[in-house]
Image (cartoon, rainbow, N blue to C red; front, side, top):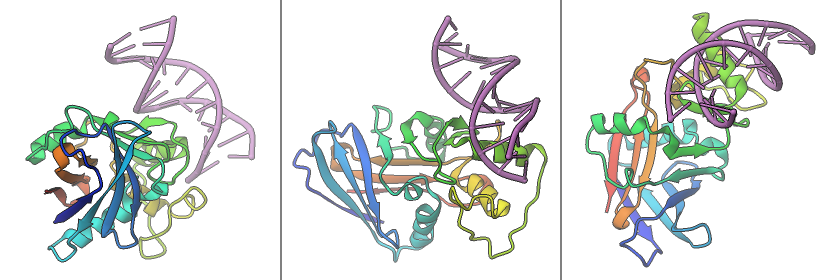
Amino acid sequence: MFTTSSTNSDTTTPPSSVKLLSIDEHAQTIQFNTSQDTNNLTSDSLCIDSSERGTQELLNSIHHNSPISNNNNSNCILNLNSKATSFPSSITDLSLLSSSSSLFHCENCPICGDKVSGYHYGLPTCESCKGFFKRTVQNKKEYHCNEQGNCVVDRLHRKRCAYCRFQKCLIVGMRVEGESSLCFFLIDCSFNRFALIVCFSVTQHTLIYACSGV
DNA sequence: AGTCAAGGCCAC
DNA sequence: GTGGCCTTGACT
């Protein structure tokens, strides 16, 4: 699924962090910096074979719904710790890792892009999306979209379509306590072997992928 | 005691 | 209905 390129001459030492630089319009290349420290950034990239079955659909989902792409690609840092440098090989492993929410840090709300106020219902979100999700779940609200279910959900337009806002809450992984829902991102650059792991909510019947490139 | 997330409250 | 602020309870 992936091929990789790297300008990093040190191929044996895992980086301490990965900073995402960009995802192109069709989510076919993902550029990111790896670093041992913030003053020594090197440039790497993933190239995705979009001809592989299901790949493009998955990456479009990432592009449109992930905290990464909703953040102008500037404020998301995936931190790698010792646990994250081993590559999980099964969904069970992924579900264990997904509970390590501290691996993923984002300054902007993955739903609307507003300022994150803390972790709410499993994700770092803003205060308004926290309240919106709470009211929806508590009151068992059902919304309907007047468009085709693809409304823009950002800080300015989040009030316009509750249906699309709530769908986005579910897609990015918000959940009530006790519900099984996975939303996990990891780029593993240990020993110059790159892997992107994407795990979405099982309640949305979306694919769970674990892909690696050499 | 400090921190954090869930839930409550209430002006708008 | 929304969203900012507050209280509460669990946890360390």
